[in-house]
Length: 489
Image (cartoon, rainbow, N blue to C red; front, top):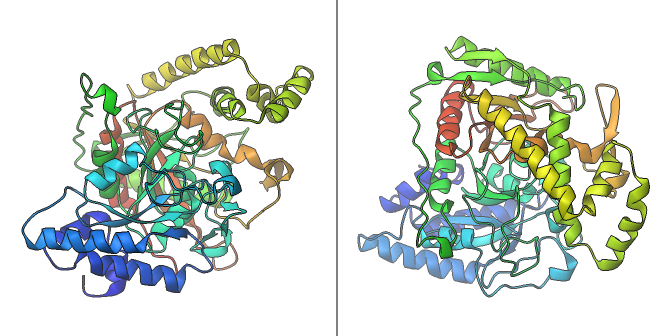
Protein backbone atom coordinates (compact mmCIF):
# COMPACT_ATOMS: atom_id res chain seq x y z
CA UNK A 1 0.00 0.00 0.00
CA UNK A 2 1.95 2.97 -1.30
CA UNK A 3 -0.64 5.73 -1.62
CA UNK A 4 -3.42 7.22 0.46
CA UNK A 5 -6.07 6.06 -1.97
CA UNK A 6 -4.71 2.52 -1.91
CA UNK A 7 -4.89 2.51 1.87
CA UNK A 8 -8.33 4.16 2.01
CA UNK A 9 -9.80 1.43 -0.19
CA UNK A 10 -7.85 -1.50 1.23
CA UNK A 11 -10.23 -3.89 2.93
CA UNK A 12 -10.27 -4.35 6.69
CA UNK A 13 -8.37 -7.64 6.53
CA UNK A 14 -5.51 -5.98 4.66
CA UNK A 15 -5.55 -2.95 6.98
CA UNK A 16 -5.24 -5.13 10.08
CA UNK A 17 -2.39 -7.08 8.45
CA UNK A 18 -0.57 -3.87 7.52
CA UNK A 19 -0.96 -2.45 11.04
CA UNK A 20 0.39 -5.67 12.55
CA UNK A 21 3.32 -5.66 10.11
CA UNK A 22 4.02 -2.00 10.99
CA UNK A 23 3.62 -0.95 7.36
CA UNK A 24 1.16 1.67 8.54
CA UNK A 25 0.20 2.77 12.01
CA UNK A 26 -3.31 2.74 13.40
CA UNK A 27 -3.02 6.51 13.97
CA UNK A 28 -1.94 7.10 10.36
CA UNK A 29 -4.90 5.14 9.03
CA UNK A 30 -7.28 6.97 11.34
CA UNK A 31 -5.99 10.38 10.25
CA UNK A 32 -6.25 9.39 6.58
CA UNK A 33 -9.91 8.41 6.99
CA UNK A 34 -10.73 11.57 8.94
CA UNK A 35 -9.06 13.74 6.30
CA UNK A 36 -11.12 12.03 3.57
CA UNK A 37 -14.32 12.63 5.52
CA UNK A 38 -13.44 16.30 5.98
CA UNK A 39 -12.66 16.67 2.28
CA UNK A 40 -15.24 14.47 0.57
CA UNK A 41 -18.20 13.79 2.82
CA UNK A 42 -20.02 17.11 2.31
CA UNK A 43 -22.35 16.08 -0.55
CA UNK A 44 -22.57 12.49 0.73
CA UNK A 45 -23.23 13.20 4.41
CA UNK A 46 -22.51 9.66 5.55
CA UNK A 47 -20.57 10.24 8.79
CA UNK A 48 -22.60 12.36 11.20
CA UNK A 49 -20.77 12.12 14.55
CA UNK A 50 -17.04 11.93 15.26
CA UNK A 51 -15.27 10.97 18.51
CA UNK A 52 -11.74 11.88 17.56
CA UNK A 53 -10.03 12.66 20.85
CA UNK A 54 -10.71 9.22 22.29
CA UNK A 55 -10.12 7.51 18.94
CA UNK A 56 -6.71 9.13 18.58
CA UNK A 57 -5.72 8.13 22.09
CA UNK A 58 -6.82 4.53 21.48
CA UNK A 59 -5.01 4.42 18.12
CA UNK A 60 -1.81 5.61 19.80
CA UNK A 61 -2.25 2.93 22.45
CA UNK A 62 -2.77 0.31 19.73
CA UNK A 63 0.45 1.42 18.04
CA UNK A 64 2.38 1.12 21.31
CA UNK A 65 0.99 -2.40 21.71
CA UNK A 66 2.02 -3.25 18.14
CA UNK A 67 5.53 -1.91 18.75
CA UNK A 68 5.80 -4.13 21.82
CA UNK A 69 4.84 -7.18 19.75
CA UNK A 70 1.30 -7.45 21.09
CA UNK A 71 -2.17 -7.50 19.60
CA UNK A 72 -5.65 -6.81 20.96
CA UNK A 73 -7.31 -9.27 18.64
CA UNK A 74 -8.47 -9.83 15.04
CA UNK A 75 -9.37 -6.14 14.55
CA UNK A 76 -6.29 -4.77 16.28
CA UNK A 77 -5.96 -1.04 15.64
CA UNK A 78 -8.63 -0.90 12.93
CA UNK A 79 -10.48 2.45 12.79
CA UNK A 80 -14.14 2.00 11.86
CA UNK A 81 -17.56 3.61 12.07
CA UNK A 82 -20.87 2.32 13.46
CA UNK A 83 -24.44 2.83 12.22
CA UNK A 84 -26.14 5.42 14.44
CA UNK A 85 -28.65 2.95 15.84
CA UNK A 86 -26.16 1.02 18.00
CA UNK A 87 -25.53 2.35 21.47
CA UNK A 88 -21.93 3.49 21.90
CA UNK A 89 -20.68 4.46 25.35
CA UNK A 90 -19.69 8.10 25.36
CA UNK A 91 -20.67 8.69 21.73
CA UNK A 92 -23.96 10.27 20.71
CA UNK A 93 -26.50 7.70 19.48
CA UNK A 94 -29.61 9.25 17.92
CA UNK A 95 -31.25 6.71 15.59
CA UNK A 96 -31.99 9.79 13.47
CA UNK A 97 -34.58 10.98 16.01
CA UNK A 98 -34.83 14.59 17.26
CA UNK A 99 -35.90 13.22 20.65
CA UNK A 100 -32.51 11.48 20.93
CA UNK A 101 -30.39 14.21 19.33
CA UNK A 102 -28.24 14.53 22.46
CA UNK A 103 -28.53 10.95 23.72
CA UNK A 104 -25.14 9.66 24.89
CA UNK A 105 -25.32 6.09 26.22
CA UNK A 106 -23.36 4.90 29.23
CA UNK A 107 -22.81 1.41 27.82
CA UNK A 108 -22.06 -0.21 24.49
CA UNK A 109 -24.38 -2.47 22.56
CA UNK A 110 -23.17 -6.07 22.79
CA UNK A 111 -22.15 -6.05 19.12
CA UNK A 112 -20.18 -2.83 19.58
CA UNK A 113 -18.47 -4.23 22.67
CA UNK A 114 -17.40 -7.29 20.69
CA UNK A 115 -15.83 -5.12 18.00
CA UNK A 116 -13.95 -3.11 20.62
CA UNK A 117 -12.84 -6.24 22.48
CA UNK A 118 -11.44 -7.51 19.15
CA UNK A 119 -9.29 -4.38 18.87
CA UNK A 120 -11.39 -2.02 16.74
CA UNK A 121 -11.28 1.75 17.18
CA UNK A 122 -14.74 3.31 16.80
CA UNK A 123 -14.22 6.89 15.66
CA UNK A 124 -17.65 7.87 14.30
CA UNK A 125 -21.30 7.11 13.62
CA UNK A 126 -23.10 6.95 10.26
CA UNK A 127 -26.46 8.33 9.25
CA UNK A 128 -29.78 6.47 9.34
CA UNK A 129 -33.41 7.47 8.75
CA UNK A 130 -35.71 8.27 11.64
CA UNK A 131 -35.65 5.18 13.90
CA UNK A 132 -34.19 3.20 10.97
CA UNK A 133 -37.62 3.26 9.33
CA UNK A 134 -37.08 3.96 5.62
CA UNK A 135 -35.43 2.56 2.50
CA UNK A 136 -33.60 5.84 2.01
CA UNK A 137 -31.62 7.84 4.56
CA UNK A 138 -32.64 11.26 5.81
CA UNK A 139 -33.76 12.74 9.13
CA UNK A 140 -34.31 16.09 10.83
CA UNK A 141 -31.18 15.75 12.95
CA UNK A 142 -28.52 15.26 10.27
CA UNK A 143 -30.20 15.64 6.88
CA UNK A 144 -29.94 13.48 3.78
CA UNK A 145 -27.27 10.95 2.82
CA UNK A 146 -26.37 10.80 -0.86
CA UNK A 147 -25.02 7.89 -2.85
CA UNK A 148 -21.26 8.20 -3.50
CA UNK A 149 -21.90 7.12 -7.10
CA UNK A 150 -24.27 10.09 -7.52
CA UNK A 151 -25.12 12.18 -4.43
CA UNK A 152 -28.44 13.28 -5.99
CA UNK A 153 -29.56 9.65 -5.64
CA UNK A 154 -30.42 7.51 -2.65
CA UNK A 155 -27.83 5.50 -0.73
CA UNK A 156 -30.68 3.35 0.55
CA UNK A 157 -31.74 2.69 4.10
CA UNK A 158 -31.66 2.19 6.82
CA UNK A 159 -27.89 1.58 6.83
CA UNK A 160 -27.50 4.18 4.08
CA UNK A 161 -24.81 6.15 5.85
CA UNK A 162 -22.93 2.94 6.60
CA UNK A 163 -22.91 1.72 2.99
CA UNK A 164 -22.03 5.18 1.68
CA UNK A 165 -19.12 5.47 4.13
CA UNK A 166 -17.76 2.08 3.09
CA UNK A 167 -18.15 2.90 -0.62
CA UNK A 168 -16.49 6.31 -0.29
CA UNK A 169 -13.41 5.02 1.52
CA UNK A 170 -14.33 6.65 4.84
CA UNK A 171 -14.23 3.38 6.79
CA UNK A 172 -13.03 -0.15 6.02
CA UNK A 173 -15.73 -1.87 8.10
CA UNK A 174 -19.19 -1.03 9.42
CA UNK A 175 -21.75 -2.49 11.79
CA UNK A 176 -25.20 -2.33 10.21
CA UNK A 177 -28.57 -3.81 11.10
CA UNK A 178 -31.31 -5.38 8.99
CA UNK A 179 -34.97 -6.06 9.75
CA UNK A 180 -36.36 -5.30 6.28
CA UNK A 181 -33.27 -5.06 4.10
CA UNK A 182 -31.35 -2.36 5.93
CA UNK A 183 -27.95 -3.98 5.31
CA UNK A 184 -28.65 -5.58 1.95
CA UNK A 185 -30.50 -2.75 0.22
CA UNK A 186 -27.87 0.00 0.78
CA UNK A 187 -25.13 -2.48 -0.16
CA UNK A 188 -26.92 -3.05 -3.48
CA UNK A 189 -27.33 0.67 -4.16
CA UNK A 190 -23.76 1.63 -3.17
CA UNK A 191 -21.94 -1.35 -4.70
CA UNK A 192 -20.64 -2.77 -1.41
CA UNK A 193 -20.93 -6.05 0.53
CA UNK A 194 -23.20 -6.79 3.48
CA UNK A 195 -24.26 -9.80 5.52
CA UNK A 196 -27.57 -10.36 7.27
CA UNK A 197 -26.56 -13.31 9.45
CA UNK A 198 -28.84 -16.14 10.52
CA UNK A 199 -31.25 -14.65 13.00
CA UNK A 200 -30.20 -14.48 16.67
CA UNK A 201 -26.51 -15.33 16.22
CA UNK A 202 -25.56 -11.64 16.60
CA UNK A 203 -27.29 -10.11 19.64
CA UNK A 204 -29.28 -6.97 18.94
CA UNK A 205 -29.27 -5.75 22.53
CA UNK A 206 -28.34 -2.09 22.49
CA UNK A 207 -30.05 -1.40 19.17
CA UNK A 208 -32.41 1.59 18.81
CA UNK A 209 -35.24 0.89 18.05
CA UNK A 210 -36.48 -0.50 20.53
CA UNK A 211 -36.12 2.08 23.21
CA UNK A 212 -32.72 2.89 24.72
CA UNK A 213 -31.74 0.22 27.21
CA UNK A 214 -34.10 -2.45 25.84
CA UNK A 215 -33.07 -6.05 26.62
CA UNK A 216 -35.32 -7.64 23.98
CA UNK A 217 -34.06 -9.63 21.00
CA UNK A 218 -36.39 -8.55 18.20
CA UNK A 219 -37.72 -11.04 15.65
CA UNK A 220 -36.13 -10.84 12.18
CA UNK A 221 -33.71 -8.03 13.08
CA UNK A 222 -30.02 -8.92 12.69
CA UNK A 223 -26.84 -6.97 13.16
CA UNK A 224 -24.16 -7.67 10.62
CA UNK A 225 -20.95 -6.46 8.95
CA UNK A 226 -20.76 -4.20 5.90
CA UNK A 227 -17.52 -3.99 3.94
CA UNK A 228 -15.74 -3.99 0.58
CA UNK A 229 -14.94 -7.72 0.42
CA UNK A 230 -16.40 -11.07 1.34
CA UNK A 231 -13.43 -11.90 3.51
CA UNK A 232 -14.21 -8.84 5.61
CA UNK A 233 -17.78 -10.09 6.07
CA UNK A 234 -16.24 -13.32 7.38
CA UNK A 235 -13.92 -11.36 9.65
CA UNK A 236 -16.83 -9.34 11.00
CA UNK A 237 -18.99 -12.41 11.52
CA UNK A 238 -16.23 -14.15 13.48
CA UNK A 239 -16.10 -11.21 15.88
CA UNK A 240 -19.83 -10.49 16.17
CA UNK A 241 -21.46 -13.92 16.34
CA UNK A 242 -22.10 -15.61 19.65
CA UNK A 243 -24.69 -16.08 22.39
CA UNK A 244 -25.94 -13.46 24.80
CA UNK A 245 -23.60 -13.05 27.78
CA UNK A 246 -26.03 -14.72 30.19
CA UNK A 247 -26.29 -17.74 27.88
CA UNK A 248 -22.56 -18.31 27.49
CA UNK A 249 -22.45 -20.52 30.58
CA UNK A 250 -24.16 -23.30 28.60
CA UNK A 251 -24.46 -22.27 24.96
CA UNK A 252 -21.84 -21.88 22.29
CA UNK A 253 -21.94 -21.22 18.58
CA UNK A 254 -20.14 -23.47 16.12
CA UNK A 255 -21.08 -22.44 12.60
CA UNK A 256 -20.19 -25.22 10.13
CA UNK A 257 -17.30 -24.59 7.78
CA UNK A 258 -17.81 -24.81 4.02
CA UNK A 259 -15.55 -26.25 1.35
CA UNK A 260 -16.05 -24.33 -1.89
CA UNK A 261 -12.94 -24.23 -4.07
CA UNK A 262 -14.62 -22.31 -6.91
CA UNK A 263 -18.01 -21.87 -8.57
CA UNK A 264 -17.82 -25.27 -10.22
CA UNK A 265 -18.57 -26.67 -6.76
CA UNK A 266 -21.86 -24.76 -6.57
CA UNK A 267 -25.42 -25.75 -7.39
CA UNK A 268 -27.21 -22.43 -7.82
CA UNK A 269 -30.90 -21.63 -8.18
CA UNK A 270 -31.46 -18.18 -9.69
CA UNK A 271 -34.49 -15.91 -9.70
CA UNK A 272 -34.72 -12.78 -11.86
CA UNK A 273 -38.18 -11.32 -11.37
CA UNK A 274 -41.58 -11.53 -9.73
CA UNK A 275 -44.93 -10.60 -11.24
CA UNK A 276 -46.22 -8.99 -8.06
CA UNK A 277 -43.01 -7.05 -7.35
CA UNK A 278 -41.42 -6.54 -10.78
CA UNK A 279 -37.74 -5.75 -11.12
CA UNK A 280 -36.58 -2.92 -13.40
CA UNK A 281 -35.10 -4.02 -16.73
CA UNK A 282 -31.66 -2.53 -16.04
CA UNK A 283 -31.41 -4.54 -12.81
CA UNK A 284 -32.50 -7.76 -14.53
CA UNK A 285 -29.98 -7.21 -17.31
CA UNK A 286 -27.08 -6.95 -14.89
CA UNK A 287 -28.22 -10.00 -12.93
CA UNK A 288 -28.74 -12.11 -16.04
CA UNK A 289 -25.24 -11.26 -17.23
CA UNK A 290 -23.82 -12.24 -13.85
CA UNK A 291 -25.73 -15.53 -13.84
CA UNK A 292 -24.49 -16.30 -17.35
CA UNK A 293 -20.91 -15.69 -16.23
CA UNK A 294 -21.35 -18.15 -13.38
CA UNK A 295 -22.73 -20.79 -15.73
CA UNK A 296 -19.86 -20.24 -18.17
CA UNK A 297 -17.41 -20.65 -15.28
CA UNK A 298 -18.77 -24.07 -14.40
CA UNK A 299 -21.47 -23.51 -11.79
CA UNK A 300 -24.67 -25.52 -12.11
CA UNK A 301 -27.11 -22.64 -12.65
CA UNK A 302 -30.85 -23.24 -12.98
CA UNK A 303 -33.56 -20.61 -13.18
CA UNK A 304 -36.21 -21.45 -10.59
CA UNK A 305 -39.23 -20.05 -8.81
CA UNK A 306 -38.67 -18.85 -5.27
CA UNK A 307 -39.34 -21.70 -2.82
CA UNK A 308 -42.18 -19.59 -1.41
CA UNK A 309 -44.04 -17.01 -3.53
CA UNK A 310 -42.68 -13.55 -2.81
CA UNK A 311 -46.09 -12.03 -1.94
CA UNK A 312 -46.58 -14.73 0.70
CA UNK A 313 -43.18 -14.08 2.28
CA UNK A 314 -43.74 -10.34 2.17
CA UNK A 315 -47.10 -10.81 3.89
CA UNK A 316 -45.30 -12.81 6.59
CA UNK A 317 -42.83 -9.95 7.04
CA UNK A 318 -45.67 -7.47 7.49
CA UNK A 319 -47.55 -9.69 9.93
CA UNK A 320 -44.45 -10.41 11.99
CA UNK A 321 -42.51 -7.14 11.94
CA UNK A 322 -45.20 -4.46 11.87
CA UNK A 323 -46.68 -5.54 15.24
CA UNK A 324 -43.22 -4.91 16.73
CA UNK A 325 -43.27 -1.39 15.30
CA UNK A 326 -46.86 -0.90 16.40
CA UNK A 327 -46.00 -1.87 19.97
CA UNK A 328 -43.80 1.23 20.27
CA UNK A 329 -46.39 3.68 18.92
CA UNK A 330 -47.63 6.43 21.24
CA UNK A 331 -50.87 5.45 22.96
CA UNK A 332 -52.96 8.05 21.11
CA UNK A 333 -51.65 6.99 17.69
CA UNK A 334 -52.23 3.32 18.44
CA UNK A 335 -55.76 4.05 19.64
CA UNK A 336 -56.52 5.81 16.33
CA UNK A 337 -55.24 2.82 14.34
CA UNK A 338 -57.18 0.35 16.47
CA UNK A 339 -60.35 2.34 15.80
CA UNK A 340 -60.03 2.14 12.00
CA UNK A 341 -58.43 -1.31 11.67
CA UNK A 342 -61.71 -3.33 11.70
CA UNK A 343 -62.83 -1.56 8.54
CA UNK A 344 -59.57 -2.33 6.72
CA UNK A 345 -60.57 -5.78 5.45
CA UNK A 346 -58.78 -5.85 2.09
CA UNK A 347 -55.67 -7.86 1.25
CA UNK A 348 -53.90 -4.86 -0.30
CA UNK A 349 -50.60 -3.77 1.21
CA UNK A 350 -51.96 -0.72 3.03
CA UNK A 351 -54.87 -2.56 4.67
CA UNK A 352 -52.71 -5.49 5.70
CA UNK A 353 -50.03 -3.17 7.08
CA UNK A 354 -52.50 -1.20 9.19
CA UNK A 355 -54.06 -4.37 10.63
CA UNK A 356 -50.61 -5.76 11.40
CA UNK A 357 -49.57 -2.67 13.32
CA UNK A 358 -52.29 -3.38 15.91
CA UNK A 359 -52.35 -7.19 15.71
CA UNK A 360 -52.89 -9.17 18.90
CA UNK A 361 -50.86 -12.11 20.17
CA UNK A 362 -53.14 -14.64 18.46
CA UNK A 363 -52.71 -12.99 15.05
CA UNK A 364 -48.95 -12.89 15.42
CA UNK A 365 -48.79 -16.52 16.56
CA UNK A 366 -50.69 -17.54 13.44
CA UNK A 367 -48.29 -15.49 11.32
CA UNK A 368 -45.32 -17.21 12.95
CA UNK A 369 -46.83 -20.64 12.25
CA UNK A 370 -47.25 -19.70 8.59
CA UNK A 371 -43.64 -18.44 8.52
CA UNK A 372 -42.32 -21.71 9.96
CA UNK A 373 -44.08 -23.66 7.21
CA UNK A 374 -42.50 -21.33 4.65
CA UNK A 375 -39.08 -21.93 6.22
CA UNK A 376 -39.56 -25.68 5.69
CA UNK A 377 -40.07 -25.05 1.99
CA UNK A 378 -36.83 -23.10 1.85
CA UNK A 379 -35.03 -25.90 3.68
CA UNK A 380 -36.33 -28.38 1.11
CA UNK A 381 -35.00 -26.19 -1.72
CA UNK A 382 -31.53 -26.30 -0.17
CA UNK A 383 -31.51 -30.07 -0.59
CA UNK A 384 -31.17 -29.33 -4.33
CA UNK A 385 -29.29 -26.01 -4.36
CA UNK A 386 -26.41 -24.75 -2.25
CA UNK A 387 -27.61 -21.15 -2.55
CA UNK A 388 -30.39 -19.19 -4.20
CA UNK A 389 -29.46 -15.96 -6.00
CA UNK A 390 -32.06 -13.25 -6.51
CA UNK A 391 -32.52 -9.46 -6.67
CA UNK A 392 -31.95 -7.31 -3.62
CA UNK A 393 -34.15 -4.44 -4.76
CA UNK A 394 -36.30 -3.57 -7.72
CA UNK A 395 -34.36 -0.43 -8.74
CA UNK A 396 -30.90 1.05 -8.98
CA UNK A 397 -30.12 4.14 -6.95
CA UNK A 398 -32.95 6.60 -7.61
CA UNK A 399 -33.39 10.33 -6.88
CA UNK A 400 -34.22 11.28 -3.32
CA UNK A 401 -37.90 11.48 -2.43
CA UNK A 402 -38.28 13.16 0.96
CA UNK A 403 -42.05 13.08 1.17
CA UNK A 404 -43.67 10.98 3.91
CA UNK A 405 -43.31 7.36 2.88
CA UNK A 406 -47.09 6.83 2.72
CA UNK A 407 -47.31 9.53 0.02
CA UNK A 408 -44.62 8.09 -2.24
CA UNK A 409 -45.26 5.91 -5.26
CA UNK A 410 -42.85 4.39 -7.72
CA UNK A 411 -43.22 3.24 -11.32
CA UNK A 412 -41.37 0.17 -12.59
CA UNK A 413 -41.99 -1.17 -16.05
CA UNK A 414 -45.16 0.88 -16.41
CA UNK A 415 -46.59 -0.42 -13.11
CA UNK A 416 -47.15 2.06 -10.29
CA UNK A 417 -46.92 0.73 -6.73
CA UNK A 418 -46.47 1.97 -3.19
CA UNK A 419 -42.90 3.01 -2.44
CA UNK A 420 -42.97 1.01 0.80
CA UNK A 421 -43.41 -2.17 -1.23
CA UNK A 422 -39.86 -1.79 -2.54
CA UNK A 423 -38.72 -3.74 0.51
CA UNK A 424 -40.61 -6.86 -0.63
CA UNK A 425 -37.57 -8.76 -1.92
CA UNK A 426 -35.49 -8.01 1.19
CA UNK A 427 -38.29 -8.08 3.73
CA UNK A 428 -39.90 -11.28 2.50
CA UNK A 429 -36.65 -13.22 2.38
CA UNK A 430 -35.42 -11.65 5.63
CA UNK A 431 -38.49 -12.93 7.46
CA UNK A 432 -37.30 -16.48 6.71
CA UNK A 433 -34.42 -15.86 9.22
CA UNK A 434 -31.83 -17.24 6.78
CA UNK A 435 -28.27 -15.97 6.26
CA UNK A 436 -28.13 -13.65 3.25
CA UNK A 437 -25.16 -11.86 1.74
CA UNK A 438 -25.59 -8.88 -0.58
CA UNK A 439 -22.73 -8.71 -3.08
CA UNK A 440 -22.05 -6.54 -6.16
CA UNK A 441 -23.33 -8.07 -9.41
CA UNK A 442 -22.16 -5.34 -11.80
CA UNK A 443 -23.06 -1.88 -13.08
CA UNK A 444 -25.81 -0.64 -15.35
CA UNK A 445 -24.92 -0.16 -19.01
CA UNK A 446 -24.99 2.99 -21.17
CA UNK A 447 -23.63 6.48 -20.74
CA UNK A 448 -26.70 8.54 -19.87
CA UNK A 449 -28.53 9.24 -16.58
CA UNK A 450 -28.79 6.07 -14.53
CA UNK A 451 -25.84 4.40 -16.25
CA UNK A 452 -22.88 3.02 -14.36
CA UNK A 453 -24.89 2.51 -11.16
CA UNK A 454 -24.31 -0.52 -8.93
CA UNK A 455 -26.55 -3.57 -8.89
CA UNK A 456 -26.30 -6.23 -6.20
CA UNK A 457 -27.64 -9.72 -5.67
CA UNK A 458 -28.81 -11.64 -2.64
CA UNK A 459 -26.98 -14.89 -1.89
CA UNK A 460 -29.40 -16.89 0.28
CA UNK A 461 -28.39 -20.06 2.09
CA UNK A 462 -29.61 -22.55 4.72
CA UNK A 463 -30.19 -21.49 8.31
CA UNK A 464 -26.95 -21.37 10.32
CA UNK A 465 -24.90 -22.10 7.21
CA UNK A 466 -23.55 -18.56 7.18
CA UNK A 467 -20.06 -19.74 6.29
CA UNK A 468 -21.44 -21.65 3.30
CA UNK A 469 -23.15 -18.46 2.13
CA UNK A 470 -19.90 -16.53 2.48
CA UNK A 471 -17.90 -19.25 0.72
CA UNK A 472 -20.37 -19.19 -2.16
CA UNK A 473 -20.28 -15.38 -2.24
CA UNK A 474 -16.48 -15.43 -2.41
CA UNK A 475 -16.48 -17.93 -5.27
CA UNK A 476 -19.11 -15.90 -7.15
CA UNK A 477 -17.21 -12.65 -6.62
CA UNK A 478 -14.05 -14.23 -7.99
CA UNK A 479 -15.95 -14.73 -11.27
CA UNK A 480 -18.11 -11.63 -11.65
CA UNK A 481 -15.95 -9.05 -9.84
CA UNK A 482 -16.43 -7.11 -6.64
CA UNK A 483 -16.30 -3.58 -5.30
CA UNK A 484 -15.53 -0.68 -7.65
CA UNK A 485 -14.42 2.72 -6.35
CA UNK A 486 -17.08 5.37 -7.14
CA UNK A 487 -15.97 8.12 -9.56
CA UNK A 488 -14.42 11.05 -7.75
CA UNK A 489 -13.35 9.12 -4.67
